[in-house]
Length: 102
Image (cartoon, rainbow, N blue to C red; front, side, top):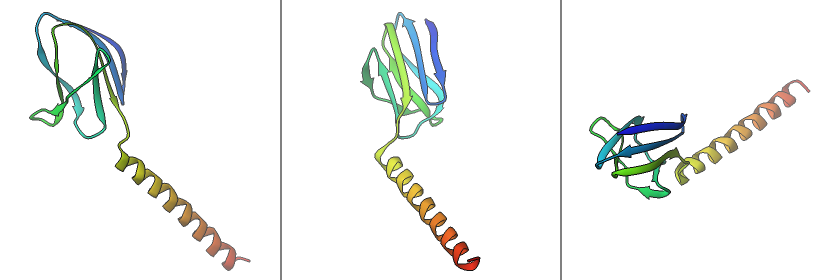
């Protein structure tokens, strides 16, 4: 087996893997919704390992593996709610400050 790391960031991994047989790969990254794995530009199923890490099968041959973290709809909605809440708190703070120190 030969592994060549092409990119290694906190939310994106990219590497070439050559192997003469199929094998399971477990990444030292916690599994949760939002992670996707592409092998040769085709999405594959991922599952948590027994330790809760990202796990998936690598087919034999030469493979380009891309692992990336993407926002889920729930995470996007939560971010929007947080931003709106922050703006409203700022508005109330400055509105109250203006009334007191006018």
